[in-house]
Length: 324
Ligand SMILES: Nc1ncnc2c1ncn2[C@@H]1O[C@H](COP(=O)(O)OP(=O)(O)OP(=O)(O)O)[C@@H](O)[C@H]1O
Ligand SMILES: [Mg+2]
Image (cartoon, rainbow, N blue to C red; front, side):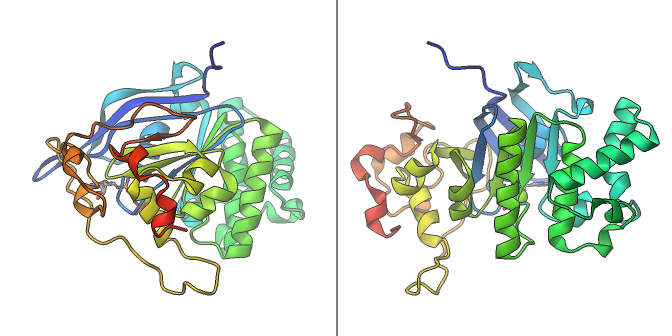
């Protein structure tokens, strides 16, 4: 039996930055899949290429960044940005909202422009969408401006606006970073409900590995522009097979009383030039060995779990080595 075709299929994507000191590659040979009704996470340290990956998928790369290899397909076809099939939610709700546009205008912009909805229809749709994202006093909020809303409400308006184009895929770039923990938990619950109700797929990026554990079906761990480990959420969190994932887990803030200090991983990621070879994490890795210089990306999939570490099977379980 063959697996059903994924909703989003990114294969071998490479993005080039044309910099003054020569080209660099913030995303290199990255492949990611999201199925219908699936929440897939991408996690990694600052600068590892998460936002660049999402922007390349949404077709909104900043100037100077160009996809130079790979394919991005939605339902087997290349993505038409104007179709609204892919919607994106950014880290800072103010970035995604226009300060001089009302809540109602944000939520009806796409349907009015793309589908030619009339004023009354658009208003009904806006109220419906705002209620869908848990804004009960929707009618009263239609005329409000972004600065009149709390951070949590702004984030809900952003989701309503994203849903207004009836997307098949929602891509989220650290959307809860600016929210406090309780609001964050409600936001995650809302996203899960939307996935269940609408059957859409979500690609969710964050540097917060434990947060992904609460919401994703599968996780991709990115390091220095590449996916170094991927698998079902529980597999990756409970038995990481790449030392970088184990280090990320060890560095995550804990809720238990013992660990107050936030550990960080020593050293820095490399400059992402074309001539890098072998494992990019090796210079920072406590388990580095001779074979690391010939590491070649993700290995074969075993039980839905893949690792780029050449010592993966030998080192398992890494959670016993400081990450538990
Ligand atoms: N517009 C740009 N011009 C030049 N370099 C860029 C640009 N955008 C990203 N980069 C570089 O690409 C690399 C990846 O950046 P990206 O923003 O994708 O990382 P990230 O994983 O999203 O980090 P963060 O967790 O801080 O958001 C970084 O080295 C960054 O400096
Ligand atoms: Mg980012």
